[in-house]
Length: 211
Picture 1 (cartoon, rainbow, N blue to C red):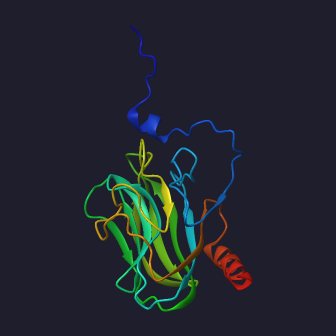
Picture 2 (cartoon, rainbow, N blue to C red):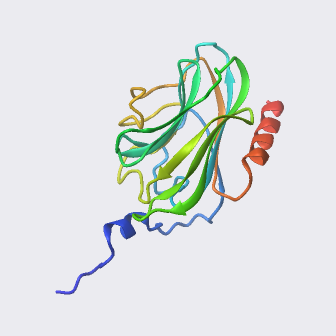
Picture 3 (tube, one colour):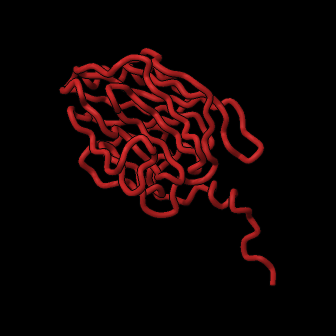
């Protein structure tokens, strides 16, 4: 009997599903909402991307998840812990986690927190290889090499979340739900265009001023 589908597992997991929604390059997510299923959430697979979180930090000891997508088997998360900004990319659950930690503490006030992955090449197994840069208010606070997985983060559950992490925690550095406390998340943007991070950060700053 001939195979009905002779694609490899990698090809199946990396294939985009048909959607009635028109393709776009920028997605905005807000707190106090249910997890967004991966099938309709922004897809960062195979490309460079930028995450920008507008946050009003009201407590010097603010902590918790700002943005999370995926689980301990693969995903990424932007969060505050021990007065530092963290971005973790969990590659298929393989240890050690790719962790990026700000070189300066998070202070009270309105801030723009960001993480950017700049794709440089494709690896032998379809993974994307490049570098990650962590930002606070447009200033680089961490940088290092990073790779991203070619397939989806989850087959079911563990959607994209703002202000908490559903299901299995993306990072071993916190426990679910890791609810953000000590401030207010205005919104989180994820951009997969070729626009520079500086342009996005400036736009986020204008949004903060309107509030």
